[in-house]
Image 1 (cartoon, rainbow, N blue to C red):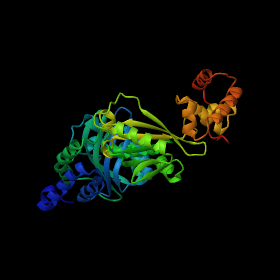
Image 2: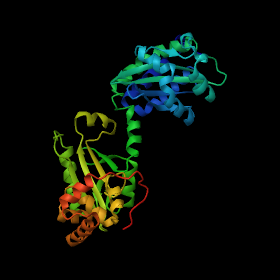
Image 3: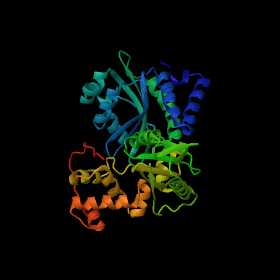
Image 4: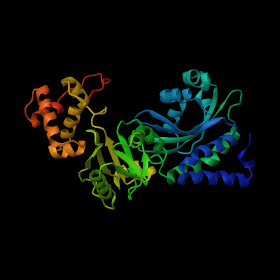
Length: 385
């Protein structure tokens, strides 16, 4: 093991420079954490972000751990000596689980979480604390390696101020840099397509649902990396909405734009354009350099409730439910027809059948019934056209 004073000056300078590079390019943290861990003979490490209010733990830029271990560590993190120590420690204070005060081998956390996966010792320091969240950088040893020694603690103490400054520079924990990976995972879990666009309209990020919508190509495509609805009228309306929402000084209190994106077969999407030019939305989405968010939802796709449940309850067909959900967006018959790509007489026919099936006779009564419906607990069954 190498004491800090034995690290060649050029190598130390390079390592510190790599730390500050991470403030400009957070994806460098994975490689930089690996370099730091290598310097103290560690097999694994990374950055941990934990929410002190929600008791939630996320491991970012980690290497060397089994996925099952990370899962268990996240579930049991609140019981760990690290969680308790970080509440009381100052930013940059370096600790190791093998320190006498942690009574490592006597702890249930060690026997049930660390030992089954061969984790012998963990060295870490809290690097940033803000808004009820905390980030810490850590490394760990496994197998038959010895516990961390004073030389290892000295190396971490030498590097800790630089890591803390680098994270503070990028304001990482304010859901900007470190949480960008967490945000991606959250967006990918949504059924709605989410497109984030820069001020000039170029798409800078698509979630998984958005990628599927573009791949199908029936209602929405990408042309020159810009959203390109199949129907010219929808294309013009969406382009104008993105331009209005993305311009400097866009009114964050203005009503969000809602646009129909028909596919020409009686289906399609409803697009909502949201400005994110300033305020908290901009902070959350800063890693994506986005000015506009476009949410694109198929009106009959789950998890939109109570639409799907309401349709099953009253025996509506897919076409009837599409009409109902278009009307529930506040569209009139002509607008609904344009959005769904059908004629206005078709809308009227569907509406009469919906009235008959639901026991209503006016659109206002129908929409009240929809909004006050309680969805059933099961939602696997899909409607047939």
